[in-house]
Each structure stands twice: as C-alpha cells, then as structure tokens.
Image (cartoon, rainbow, N blue to C red; front, top):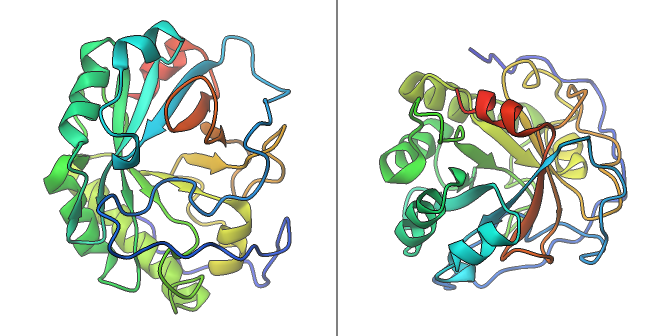
Length: 257
C-alpha cells in the first residue's frame, strides 16, 4: 500500500505554472483528460520506441465514436472516461467502452479526480462501481486516475502537498483493494511537482500516463524514470487524445495482466 508520507521537500517545476482554463460546471460532459495541458496540439512525437503502440482516449465530448474507423486508422488501445467526482457518469460510456472492445481494442476507463469534493476512497469506489473495474481477461487496462489542474477552482483543489498526497494514496489504495491493481496515474509534470511537492512515493506502484503536448515527453514527474503511456496531443488521427504506449503489442498485452 502507498503511505504517501514522503515529500521531496521542494516544489520543482519543469515549466512555469499554466493558468488552467475554467470549465462550465454545468457542462453535461464534464472535464476530460488533458483539458488543462498547454502546448502544441499539432506537434507530432519525434521519438517513438520501436514497435510502440498507438492509442486514444475519449470522453462524452467525442459523442458516439466510429470505432471501426479508429481501428482502421491504427488505434489499438483506448481509455474511456467513466466518472468524475462522486456524481458524474459519462452517458456515452457504454458506446465508447463496449464499442472499442468490439473492434478488438484493449480498453480501460479513467476517473477525473476532484479532491475538493470528497475523499479519495469514496471516489475510487464510485469509479469501480460505474465502469472502472479491472478484470484479468487480457483485454482490460487498469483503471486510471486523471489528476490535473482543477477545472472549477483553485489549481491544487485547496489542498497542500501533504493532503493531496494522502488523497491520491487513498484513491490508489482503495482501487487496489477493490480490483487487485494499482491505478495508472494520468498527470502533467508541472501539476504533480507543484501540487504534491514532487512526491516520488507513487512511482513504485502506479504506472505513469504522462500528458505533454510537445515533440517529446520532457522531464517526468518526481519518482518516475519512464512513462507507460504518453498523451502527446488532443488532435490527430483519432477522436480525442492521441496516446502512445511505451512498448510493443506483446508488452501492452502483458500490461493488462
């Protein structure tokens, strides 16, 4: 389990802190993975590991996805937004999650964390109960916690780094207790190092899904030596976010189990 007791003792930032946009709290589709990420949406990654697998991530903002076309265009895995906080459910989840599976993709679901609304354990349970469960079927990715700049208020949700680290640990440990897997963490280097004070304690258990819209991943958040998935843009060949798995198809399959 993750105790989240250690902080790196300083707020290291890879880039100046961005001013995240504010979202309409009444938007029926809520926030999405990457809403606060700065950078060039048109940048094409200049480095891809040999055999790296292309994928995508979607939310209700993409509506009903044409999954056969996404497959034909080269996507082999997908993350689908399931929940946000403890009240929001993606009303397109079934079409997106089941549709990606039907065309042969490996798929998983993600939760947009709102640490100022309720504790991490409650949000993890809500996620698992509403599409976030993991199963050992060789086709399901571990659930993901999307933790980035606050769509609706103060950047770090009004929590100091120690409290934020405890919240993330509560979510992660609860998810692990429910599913047997630790969640992958989706974040930006800037947010992580700012809002957890560069806490390195999650890297041993939680795979990293790094968001950076640029030609490369740049410096990673404290503790991680490599990313498992890189979201390089929210514009490209596929609907929604453009993702690259840091490995080949065989390694992606292994990651599901």
